[in-house]
Image (cartoon, rainbow, N blue to C red; front, side, top):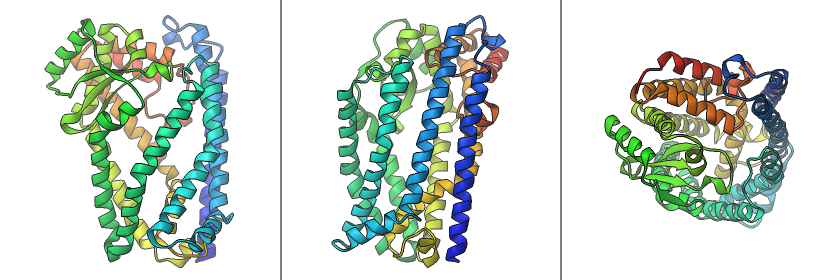
Length: 416
């Protein structure tokens, strides 16, 4: 059984790695092949220079992603069949046991992974983003963000991981159900406290100033029957020139947040239409659906781990000579992505369908033409390619291709 599982893991690993690399290379070739001309439907609104900038930016990001995929693959093999986890087990088990051992093992894996990813993070931020005019983050801010993220991870992660390990050891056969209940409650708590306690550690949030945009937004919220805990502007420009808008929070703690870069670029009518799209996600219960799916998926995965945790072949087949709850947790979350990668297109399709539904809601409650114009501006400003490879898009794009989305809005266009 051990040898069979090793072969199954290697087959899934090889297939997933090859597919991910193939998709990135397809994207590079396809975008490059369409670099010379703006698609006809965008020719009046996107310049050739902007189209080519988007192509070059997409290619650079894909090349960086290829490096990241290879680093992740090497790390996975090093931790498993390469003996990395076995070595860490030998190191920590000689000095610690129980929850202390589990925490040491999990944080060691997280630290090694973070250090391996750091060079590419720096390259992406200070080379790729800077090369295309998007980076506004200073080295000092990068270090500050990294320090805050690390401290938060330790402060929040230590008690949470300790609680999970305790539940795994103390709750008997159905520990996975108790862990799921705890994990679900923790995630709901984080959704509630993130806007007011965590997000302000990284960005400044100021109330949306008075003016035409705020007036139109308040009228839109009244029409849609939506209540929030405030309209805020986030200083996204201190890190990046990219623009965005989003909902955050849960229950009565919901906030609507606009990047300052987005407000600077769009007209009041376009801002209203973008918000109408975001309201569409809320009114169509997309956020609730995603939370339910996340909880259902975590329950299924924890149940599966519960079936594997006492199987010697699960550990030995992945190069680990010992059995332990922390080792089981680490191994499971290292190898699960390899086996579930074929489901990626289903998740992406579901997300794209939600985007079309939110666009339809926006067209019914605002101006579809304004949303189309806003989207074209955002595609232009964010250097999003207008010519993605269809297969790469099928796997990875959470939003529909620009041509499909704009064409659908044009069919729905009507006076607000």
